[in-house]
Length: 227
Image (tube, rainbow, N blue to C red; front, top):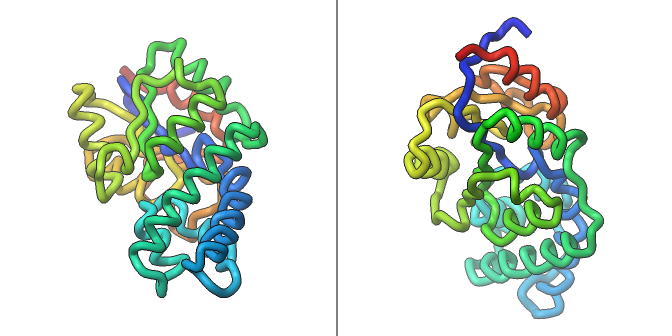
């Protein structure tokens, strides 16, 4: 690895497509949600293609629904928020969801090195909390920040709040979407782009300082970074 990075006080992670294999939970929940919307008379017609949902990951929910069901009104979108969260939490508790390979081991190794670890996600607060609890990661994180919990419209704002609240000057933002790159760069931080999830489009990670193809590459990056 030729790029020399500065050693961070904190590493901040996106959730979906970075730590958590979202599709292992999302797609069953997505189909059940539309079944309920149809049963409640709030939606008619077939369920929109899964690709629409997957390509919208990383956005805030209000934007996702504009992409997935642009003709539905605001009330349907808000009901979709409730239903998706309910189905996702049921799915998490059923225990069939997956982290990416080596996530637990890598986070543990970084935590043991004294790095402060955080989540910054555009997802809902209860969803992020439940993913962390179910996968037994809670002890490793200093804080969980979500667009839903903080009421932010962009990840750049969310990251700014996190950095300010914890007095962090030097951090790495780790994520798989352009919103993660924008958040890191918009706050003057190092960005590690994750290229293993495959949800993003061409050029999604342009502007990253380093791009990794496996999560555990973070340990080597950290150990080789300069004080």
